[in-house]
Length: 144
Image (cartoon, rainbow, N blue to C red; front, side, top):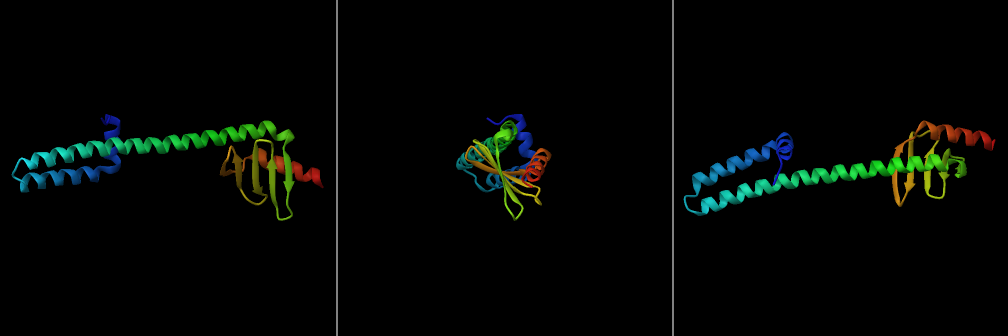
């Protein structure tokens, strides 16, 4: 059964569906004059309750997936900070670079603010943190 919070969220975001259900119920009550009318009304009401309960579950799944991705990103950053001393730095003539350790790999470009992180079989792009910029500048200075 849908909770009050689910109904509140649903009403704020999908209010037009309930208006359509109400109009449909009025049409069914005015047109159908048999016992079938009550079967249709119950089916519409049960379908609405089901839709609202599934609506919130889908929203929760999106939030959970986002939370998992945020945790993986944070774990990757913390891991890389810890492995920075033994990480391999490779700079290309075109300005791109790679920082690779035993568990994580970063790819980026000097002029870009984006950084691609490869961690636990997943790839994602984040804004380049200041400590990565400092590390890259330090490594480039050491190569000269």
